[in-house]
Length: 457
Image (cartoon, rainbow, N blue to C red; front, side, top):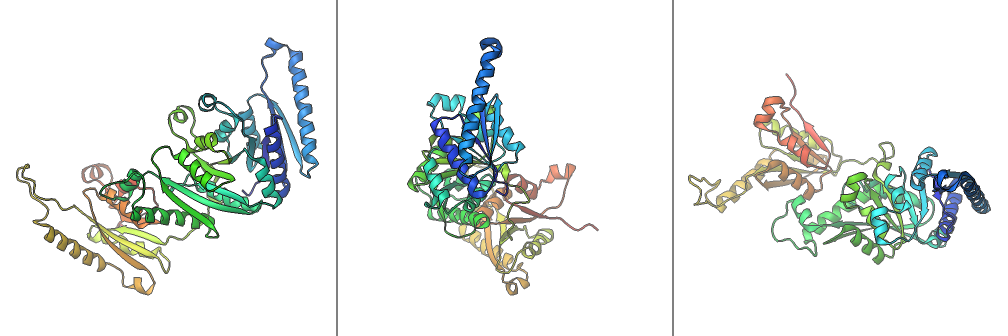
């Protein structure tokens, strides 16, 4: 939020007047200009006559100047923008041209069919705006916050990917305007979570298993610490069965939030019609103020830097596979942690229905003995310097017939910042015939990867 010029759209309704007042107070607090925009949608001159059009435009411009003068008395610099055309297109164009930091619009009451099939101006602005869009439903709360008489309760809807990063950073930067308390919430669907981290057994749809809850809270706290720090941020993880947006709004209401902040993928066209959108649902369902932050707002220059603290490295015990292990340890600071993983086929009982079936092991005892032997082999691969450097090592034997999937699942359970894996660098026919575990991990995993290739002779 380094650029904080504010664009505010108004239709001069009571809701809009309250929203522009709040926008002006925020702009004054930041000592930034407010761009006040009024857009008129007029019929074709052939239908109503050119004189009618000119008269309507004159009245609109005069009303805009009157509203701008009212706001200037509050000590804020106001720039006026009048246009004829599409309100949401004009607002986004003005925001882009003026390099604004946010757009503020008032909430308008619409029926359910209008909301879902036509869409409000606020919804369309949020869908296409290059900067965060704040939909004002309770202007008094925002004014009290700017005046310093109230703590603003932020509720930030997060995920474990990148799309909510910008929302979290924007919520953090709001503290430049006034005091804020921040709750970061994540809603998971238990079947998907169990599949992602490789948990087996019965799955409850109503609550997370203790191990799953611990993993999700750890990952969310790590994300929050990276982007927001640890000062007074509350983290909440809950499972849901049904629509994510509905459950997040319920959580925000339980937290008595003043402002709900959500990230947006900004899908358009047919994808927007058939793909569920949490941000769209929040704008339609939330009774409190809502801010929609496009994921692309964050860029490489503004992104916070963080040191990798946990690295997962896999090996097949080949000379080349073992060669990735030193690289994994080398990127960690003192106090870091490495998870050494080897993937084996799971134990299976003999199947009398399959001719000439050969089980991998004669019995469970033999299989467990092999697992222990493999763990010892992994411990033997830990570099001698690791202990003196303060780097801890965790050993895991993952059971799966799909090595790439098992590696990704182990990384999720471990909370790896980076996955380190060796690649033979095959290409062409060799890659088709022999496949590539590293390539499959790249395709499946959503974490950074360090690919170690053999040195060329």
